[in-house]
Image (spheres, rainbow, N blue to C red):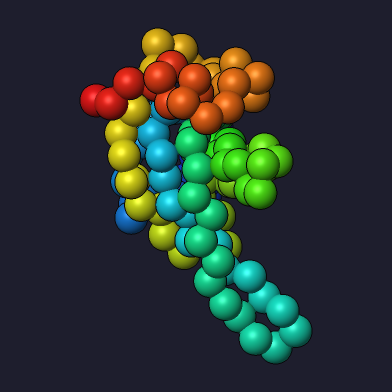
Length: 115
């Protein structure tokens, strides 16, 4: 990558984000704009994967809402993310935890041990 692009990209990187890995349970506070109003909505779930680097980095969070699994992909350095808080740290033996989609309840929790 050219140095010009790298310099411009460096301006948009956020340094206030915590370190987290796949298997961690995180709370992502997202800014949502509805008309003129803006509010913050918390999204809590397990990190399935992290992807990319620099400003293109993103991560996927999975939660179960009313018995239905919901996954959401967040750009890591997005200004729409107010904050990220690591609730519990999990120890996964893989970088992509897609197998959690087939598991639910206690079976899914047993696959991710606490760090």
